[in-house]
Image (spheres, rainbow, N blue to C red):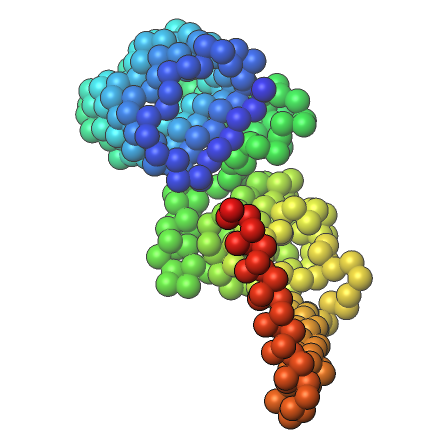
Length: 344
């Protein structure tokens, strides 16, 4: 196995320390669960490119064995309870890091100067910790943050076979400031209806993944302005209405929209775009209800026929009733005799 993603499954308990047998694993994503405990030391023995433990309840210091994961490109440990200082060995051992997120933990101490030597680092997030001191001036040496990437988005920058791309958590790559990204996410969280803000459609996004967020409402019409998207996913929400028409949005497959109540291209295949999902659902309900009603009718008719053909004559025809009881009495005597004979 090269890729393991069990994100968002309400998993609890500690991560077992048994990863020595998973040497071929390249991608591990356990984010958005209720995992506790420390990072098991055996995780460090894996040749991982991506390790994502974001949004759990894990704690403790980073194990020293993690420095053995020299192939790490993305390390996301944000939204946990990890503590201690930011290890200096990150620069010495994890020199290939492009994304390092330790946000919303309990790290303390100073930012190590050696982080400035991570020449491939593009995203560094140490916010919402107990880190003190000043920001090292050598941060100006992080040239990869300033240089424009030749790739369309970061998710394609580590070597992993295309067959495993389906389990990767797509990053939201912006050409604008990070605080704009934060504002958009916060506006979704604070919205009482959890609707997608119109403002997102006015941003020059290259990749947008809002899947599995319990979002409601329609996809904003402003999304037709997202002309630079190379990845888009709003699957498994509660979205309704027609997909906005644009060359970009229609270029993505059904997988990007599944698990909603959306309609229109690219989902529309054999039905008119004027027909809403509500109409389709109602028609389906009526059809299904019609089938169920006929089933009930056939059951009732069968019962009536059996009652009128067998039971009713016993009440109204005396000779039938006497014959019926004599037959029952005869069967009863035979059963009794058989039972008595067996008893001897």
